[in-house]
Amino acid sequence: MKNLYFAILLLLSPFFVLSQHLYEIDLNKIEKDVLPVKMTLSKVPQSDQVTYSFPATVPGTYDTQDFGRFVLSMNAKTADGKNLKVKKQGNNSFIISDAKKLKYLEYTLEDIMDRKVKKHPIFDPVATNFEEGKNFLFNNGGIFGFFEGEEADPIEIKIVKPSQLYGSTSLPQTLSNSGQQHFKANSYHQLIDCPIMFSVPDTAQFYVGNTKVTISVFDVNGVPRAKHFYEVLKRDMQAIDEFLPDLPVDNYTFIVYVDDLSEVGEAFTGKMGIIKKIKLALRFRSLGLGALEHGNSSTYYLADFGPSVPSSIIKELSLDNQLSGAAIHEFMHILTPLGLHSQHIGNFNYTNPVMCKHLWLYEGVTEYFANLIKYKGGVISPEEYLNEMGDKLVQGLDFPITEMSFTEMSSNVLEEKYHEHYGQVYQRGAVLAMLLDAEIQRLTSGKKSLIDVMLTLNARYGANKSFDESTFIAELVNEVHPDLQNFFTQYVEGKNQWQPNDQLNYIGITYHDSLQEQDMLSIFTDNDVKHKANGIGIEQVITNVGPNEWAGLKVGDIINISDYREAFEPNGVKLKEGELAKLRVKRGKEFVTLDIKAKYGLKTVKHALRWTGK
Ligand SMILES: [Zn+2]
Image (cartoon, rainbow, N blue to C red; front, side, top):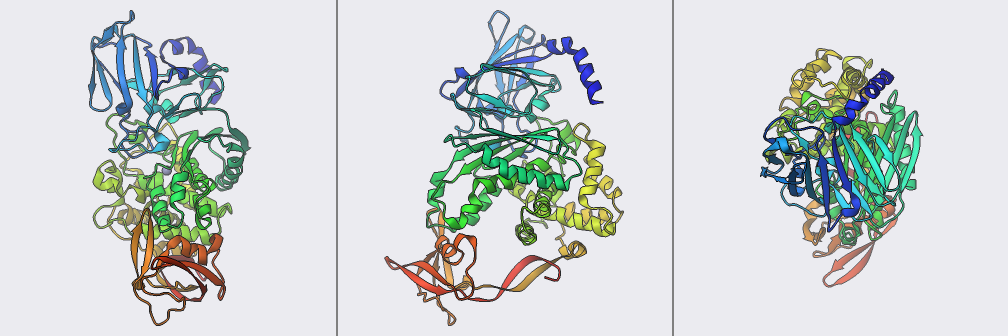
């Protein structure tokens, strides 16, 4: 079928060429971060007025971008170069009058990464970057617009570039030499789905099964990274290959931009209460670090925090960890939403986007699979897996479930009141998917699991066919057991708090509200300290010294959390019973170092997941 389709395209090719809009960009003509673009129309517009727009949002982001905000000038020209009247409407649209005379557009664009906006800031993996002679990141919503109603038409792109740069993308190329690259998109949708990064090549390539994987990296300091990222991604891709019957694509490109955030790294020195905050910030995208999925690629914006990061958190903040944290998740998006989505994504409306109620599926199921794959593929241990899912469960409890259902948050996610809970798709959403997996296994006596059902539905729909937003849950239930409807009614579409053991016990996991476990004891309790913000960090000030105090603390002592972790968990490994911690404590104006014996005892853990019987 594939070859036949290809043959038809070839037969049609003379018409094909005539009917495409042509974009021409010369990367040498960048000046002060402003990039000029020329777009020549393939045909004469049929009406006197046409609208040329940039996306208000693009698939996968669930956020507002308003890319038209970064268009600095827009000129509409006749064949002999005369200007037509152009009026900007809203943030994203340009209305062109006397349009039957329109031959080409000339416009200029601003570099999005360098122009930070306060309202609706753009997540960096969706942004554009123009750096003369070094790097051009094209997330195409920020580069190319569309004539309304022509989103399905093919597009041709001619790029003139400095000879040292090369554009990595999953977009088909028709010509590539040292001075030029030509690309072809079969529609605006494909163009948006295929980012391009031009940089001095730092690439690696490998096969997993029959899938060709390409890694293309740009590091702002010029550090070569691709060879090393290859090791990380090869391990992750192999874990995916073990989980899925077949990798669902022939080729896949990882586009990675590494920024230098060593200034932030320096701020960690001695001020460690921030770690939890940073973790949250990374998750909730405040720092713009992260990634965005596409059909045959994904774009990453990662940070090198530099050499000042304390050893106790080096692993957590490492580039490997950032990349691995996102790569499996982004790749698994091929299953959903890329290969299984409702009409709101299938016929994506860039101007007035309609959000789906199925974020539990698109992000929740994807994030759950990413963790399950790491565990099953041996990237993390069974204990690390349950700790990670347990953390998500604890954070998922913050979702205001009695006020809004998960599907309600999802359908309204562009509104502020709901958007503030968007981050829960990776927390509560992932736990809902885990519970759903267990429930499917329970109801089918282990004959089916969530991945089986997803693969069946993915095969039924795929990238080019949409499911019905309103009947999808019933369709999924139909693949499993009538009683599964109750799970969706209660916990996904309803406002009821989950009862994890109802599902998890079947797969050998127990949820504990509260659990007593043998662990290293803290030298103070929450009641004995008050938290004090210091710069970007948090310090603990001792307010009370209890009768069991064994560390030699005095009221008024100040302890940095990073010093605490460094002393009791050097290099991330907890001291053993009786080993000595050397803790730096601020006492008055001086610093003293206390030698403290590590003690173990029964500790209460709240909302924990444990393997049953352990
Ligand atoms: Zn995602």
